[in-house]
Length: 275
Image (cartoon, rainbow, N blue to C red; front, side):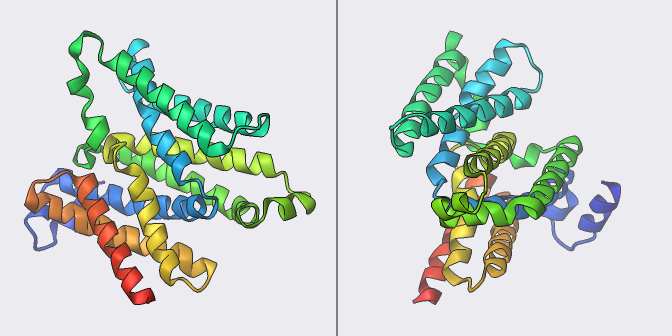
């Protein structure tokens, strides 16, 4: 961390002299490829609504963590998100209810439950950071956790990307080739739930799904291959992440939302280029 701080502080910019900006920049550089890897598969599997539900489930996970007296509710948030993901896919597999209906029903219930629990005694305002996020508060310890999470996803990506991508293209054909379709979808859903839940305190549940989807959607507009799709999503995430972080410093705005606006601008540009 000291070497990183020295490297960034050598840049001739005012923002680069502050420790919180140095750590936030490193977090952005780790989150961009992480979100790109998952975002591409989220779009291919048409799971944008599912990832939105995982973000909103953070309220209930946070409430459970508070009730348990945890100093850091991240574990409770991630655990509840995993439980919710397994529940959604279990209902999808063993019922005739459409997936989008299941997600909508579950999300409505968990959000209401989380709001009710957190609003007891009128103390809801102190949890607003989970709504908008604050990547400027990321600590060196949390950056290490983020790096471990990225490394874990890269390992899973190396072993399961082809299978997950195949399933996203044609579930019936994948099943006919002997692939355990439900297991693959469940594993991917759990990984997605954990990443979304862990990132909530830094990004905010109101914008995390946009940050997950927009870079991948922008890359898909221009990609000519799967490799170009993934690398393009990572590039868009890096550019919009760094630009949004720096702009939020000078504009005094919420960092997560500013990054999303930059990603949205890049997406709009790719639409023009595509035409």
